Length: 146
Image (cartoon, rainbow, N blue to C red):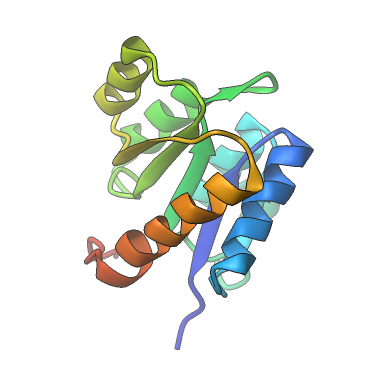
């Protein structure tokens, strides 16, 4: 059976640790690859640069992305994912503390599949991740890939 991969796009080490721990706390054994910058995220999704070996670096089944990151533009990453025929169906879930209507609209317009407002603490994040697991990894029927 082929190993699934979740791509976590996060440039804040503390938020990365919280998210990875929440995944572990919810028995999500899917491999997590962390992209810490815009170029790294795009390289992983497209299978280019240091991630060019697709036997080693599997196409993600889900991308979790924090919206507001000082080191990268989440809107740019999302629009580049959607612009490519091979990646445009990748489920991208936005995890953010922003409940601003403009942010929500902007992310959905660019093709986010889900927008989750989350206070950045371990307890609330763990509850959100449990719900993510149930829907995105167990219930959701993913689009076929070539």
